[in-house]
Picture 1 (cartoon, rainbow, N blue to C red):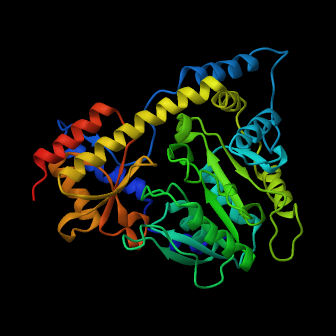
Picture 2: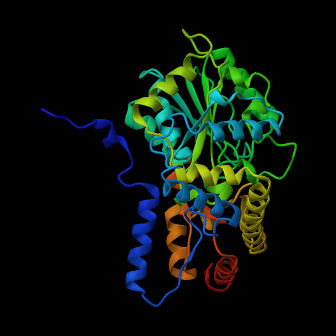
Picture 3: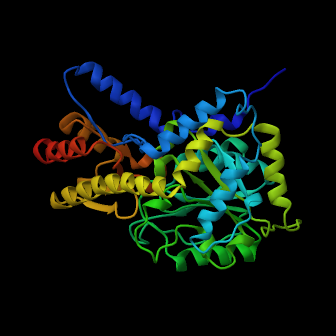
Length: 397
């Protein structure tokens, strides 16, 4: 008799963003004439830059010609893109062999799937609050989870666990709090991982939003990180690939855990991808190559600057209104402390009903997120300004 994976019963009843969509839809149905300002879900909204669009077109045209048509690609990813990413890392002073880079259909699936190459009894540490996929995928797999509190008192930056864990998820710049870890703070985790033969899964999906050159964009800027860290990244927030889907994962040959030799973890991920993945889209790959071109990077930086200007507008306006806000300087998210000790969902409802602004309740990211909401800078500048004005004029004390 077939049986379900009962670990799914341990998940929250509904996925956070699905619940937000459900509540928003219900409000809209009751108030059909109301225009909502959506500052909740972290979904890019601006058009993909022209250089990158030309790359996609090239990919389509290649598929329409018998001489250039390609079917399945390499499970590890197009060699040209792996080489290009290796060169891109080199400009940051990081040396990676193309065989250490694996192209995928996005950072989110890799963040969950990477657990499959480690022991089923692995203990997993996650930040709290945390992007749901790290925690939920660990719950589904039946792993024990250790939470690393990120609070106002510690600047929303966690300390390494007090106990021995096997896998540590870190996200910097962080989703949802918008804060960035310093090299010193990351070094503490690298030292912990090496000492405990643990692996850090470092989500760098928002790294291109960092404008301070003293802050690390890659964990491999930290001495010793290649021995203990896997880095996951994406073009989604960098170049508007949320609907295109193209990311990558770096698994260094130097990465060694208990009972393995150098190259074993890299080989296991390669084996997993070969078995369960048929390679990233050929069209997406051509677009990604265009992102890494000189013009593609310049145009993508303009895109990032647009969203970060939105973040500045949100943070400055909310601060003037007396709200306590964090983030928004090196990440497209603003972390707002709810007023008058309101719960996260209470303040979500209040903003929705009174100001017609949609945000993300912090409690959906974990226990430490209660009493906060996340605002996203991914939106049209006019809507962002309209949303701030609505909060100022309509939110009741």
